[in-house]
Image 1 (tube, rainbow, N blue to C red):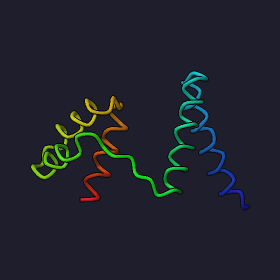
Image 2 (image 1 turned 180 degrees about the horizontal axis):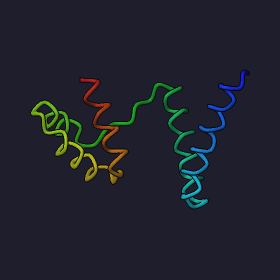
Image 3 (image 1 turned 30 degrees about the vertical axis):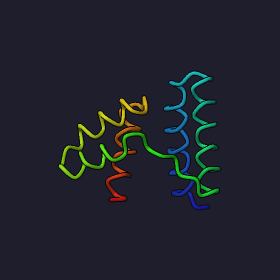
Length: 94
C-alpha cells in the first residue's frame, strides 16, 4: 500500500471514529446489529415490505418528495436521513 492510500485510509478511519464517538455504546451495538441483519436479509433475498408503499409511490409520482418522506417517517418511525434514503431508493426502483 502506497503512502497516499494509507493516508486516505487513516482519514476515513478517523472520520468513522469521530462520528461513532458521539453515539452511546447501546446505539453503536444497535447499529451494528442492524447492519448484520440487513446483510443477512440481503443474502437470503428477503425484502422488507415498506408500510404505506403505494401512498409513498403516489406522492413521488406527483413530485411530492418531501411529503413522501414525511409519510415514510410516520409509517416507520425512521429518522429524517434514513427516511430520505429509503424514499430515494423507492424512487430509483420506480
